[in-house]
Image (tube, rainbow, N blue to C red):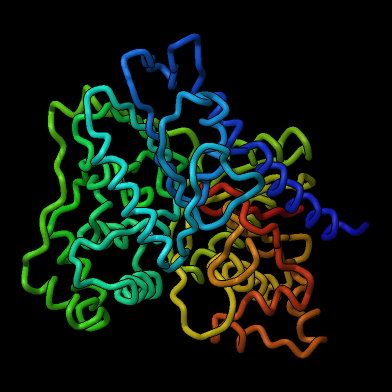
Length: 443
C-alpha cells in the first residue's frame, strides 16, 4: 500500500469511527436516566408522580433514535406524542407514530406533523403534563406550519429553495423561517404554556446557539423584525419569494415572535447533548490514539465561501506538515461551507469542497495529502452521498475517464464526478446530524 492509499484509508476510518462514537441513542441514554419514579436529565431531576401525562415530541433528522432511546427509558409512562423525521433509520419507535416530512424541502408530511403536534400540545396543556421535546437539525423543513393560511405548501417549498440557494448562512435562513412559521421561534412551546417542558438537543448549528436548531421551536428567539428585514433586503428575497408572500412581508403585518418570560424559567429547561464540537473532539481522539496522528482542530474554519475554505484547508494542512516532518498530520474542522447552487446537477457543499480541494492539490502537485469532507447526517445536498475523498491523483484519474472537473463544478454536479471515480462516500441517512466533518491528512 502506498502512502496516499494509507492516508485515504485512515481518513475514511476516522470518519466512520467518529460516526460510531457519536451514536445518538447511546448519547441520550447516557444523559437521561430513570431512577425509580425520578427522571434524571443531566443535573435535573423530575418527579414523574407529579404528572398525569408524559408527551414526547421528536423533531429532526436524529428524532427516530432519540425517540427510541426515550422509549427505552420511560416505556409505558409515555402518554402520547409523535416523531417527525425525514427517514426512519433502523427500527421505528414502538409507542410514538412517525410522520415523514420533507427535506431539504417541506412536503405534506411536514405540515401534518406540525399540525398534529400543535393539536397534541394544546389538548394536553396543563400543570400536570410533562412534555419532552427531542430536537435535532432538519426540522426547519420537515416540520412546518405557516404563520398565515394564505401561505401554501408550494410557497413554503419556494421559500426554502430560495433560502438554501441564495448564499445565506443557516442562522440567517432560520431568522426568516421563524417569522413565517407558526411553530418556529418558540411558537411550538407556546402552544402549551402551562406544561412542564424539557428540550433535549442534537445540534447542527454553531455551538451553544440552541435557538437556531430546527429554527428553535421551543426557545423564544432574540431575532427582531429589524434583523428579519435586513436579511430580506440583503438577499433580495422580496423579488424571489412568491408575490403574495412578499406582499405579506412588505405589509408589516407579520406577528412578532414569542419573547422570554421570567415565569418560563421554572417550567422550561434546555439541554445540549451533542454538537459538532463534541464530534470533532471524538475525531481528534481517534486520529491520535488509533493512528498516531498529530492533530489540529481549525476552530476558525467553520463557515465561509466553499472555494476560500478549500484553499485555506489545503494551505493549512501543508503548513502543519512542514512543522511536523515525518509525522502523519491531521487537520480537522467542522461546520458548513457556503455553497450556492449554480446548476441542476447532483451534489452538495461537502463534495464541492473536496472537488475544489482536489483541484488545488493537482495544480500545486501536492503528494501525500488527502482531503475528506462529509455530512454526519449521511446527506449532502441533493445527492445520495455524505461527501467525498480526494488526493493529488484525483483530477488525473478523472481526466483519464474524460470527466472535466470545472464543467461539473459549474453545473453543481460534484456527486457525478466522485461517483464515477468510486470516491463518493455513501452511508445513507445516519440518524444523526451535527453538521459536517472535514478531515485533511498529510505526511
